[in-house]
Length: 459
Figure 1 (cartoon, one colour):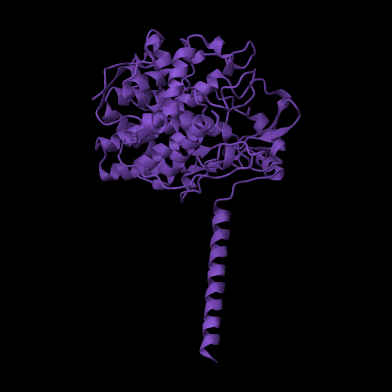
Figure 2 (tube, rainbow, N blue to C red; figure 1 turned 45 degrees about the horizontal axis):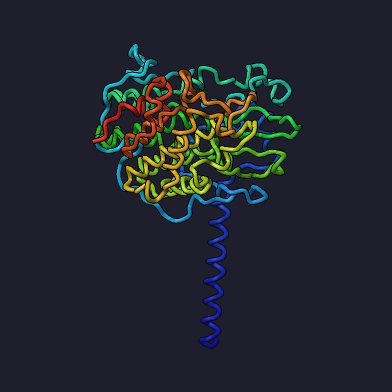
């Protein structure tokens, strides 16, 4: 056989081996990281109670991450930009920066000492529940498992959800500099392997127009972010202050890592339905997906993990692209009586963007220079929250997104005006001055690990 023929056979053999290796690898990766789709898979999840739940302790590998490209492309198809480029965390500093101190402050909810330690219980901390998306339930919820009805599912969250599991405790312990109790709380959480199971929705949701949705893990994760974000922030604070022994660190880190892994359930947290042909889809930048970006950015720091940090930064930049020149958000600040947009949900998005801006600032990024529209939003909110009707974004409808509850005496813990005080403290501005007389509840940011940003001292 001539030398040319031998060379040709060698090349063909190499190509065949490479082709087989490549496609075998792709098949394994696709199977491992596949996200359910199709009407049959949705209905199968609600036929038997708990069949689609995730047992978190069984997670063994970092998942394929999804961060959506937040543009309307005509089909709303899911475009993954989680892995675009590379961004590296540089310091062990999340929302709480280096040299930050607290001017001793105790939120009223913690005044009786109830936040001085973290307590884990079976009732609150075993299942991560998916509460009802419809207060009235009724014929808009198609429950196929008789056992679910018998047991009173779906659990309407109630005090299991609205207690914001541990976020008050964490914020209080960080802000009061009680890091030993904070560490002990995380150790006990890890030792008990708490937050054990992520519940998939137990019903198909029928829209008003008759279309059906299966919301997968969107409801359970929507509430879990309010727990996992302050937990990650606490872990960063404890690392930065060198509070762990190596054994303690390994225990807590491995426990938290699995809880971060469970956050990834694909585009829109696994929501599929009629309007997208029961295929995975993605909506443009809104309040329902932004917290994932915060969690990934923080875990990128806590784990010094380029993959997660890159995904979080890419998500932040996608939301930034959705901002108008005056700082408002195209997908949220729209006129009309919309259930999924309005001045309230716009504030929730803005709050998360401010938090991520502070995180990136603590990582050495010049936010005001690189992302000037962020401060435009702060300026817009400072001016317009005192006269929201002028914006045309409030209506007389029934949707809570149209109100400004977040600056009232009894705001939702997850949506407050505290971010404006945080911005002023970090960037030495005065946008919050006209709101200094507002309720302390409206200034708290417990779902981000801060009891009162107004009381922070930045050295």
